Length: 246
Image 1: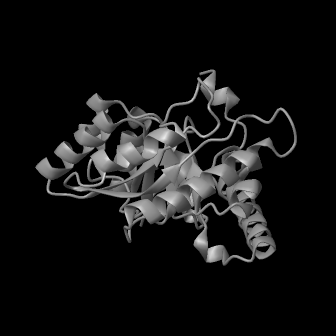
Image 2: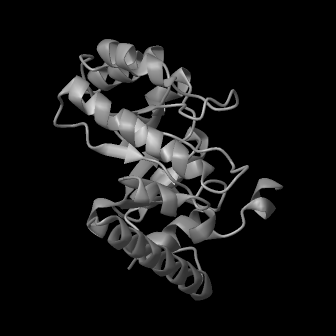
């Protein structure tokens, strides 16, 4: 019998939040003429204790995301000890010296933002006889505070990355700015979708299927613009400020 760390009230709260988000996903997909099954919901449990991630999985979530390798690894180990199968996504900035710790342990790395990082992932993956699925991070908003390839850099990046051994380039990830006017996030998502489609024609790969965009504050707009993966933290797990302050 598995022994979880969470209490029943936490699990009940998260189950309600997940159900609410799934309902919104369905409504957005209907509005966009899409199949809700096309959208993968990733629960982002960053900074929350592992029991939150456990409760979310027991509530039906199959995909979890973390921003930092040092938070991801203890959760992977805990889930392994409980024999829980879950898809882990690394969605935050990945340093080259941390790649060795996560190769073979993620469903998808969303945040590949340099050719050099892709080369390191390729090398470590080949050394471990695994294939690592990655997304290229696109800085479509042009914000200096955000990482990623500028739109005009992506084709050259694909030229350098797509043939590397032991990695599979599956699409794009982007982040929208905090809106200064209504509809700003959706504009960024729309531009990213155009870029994604253009690159699909350029790369001609059956693996090019993933468009990761949208978080708690803007995932509805992202779905309307074609997101296949959305990264939801606050809308599922709640306010993380008390854990950030610890």
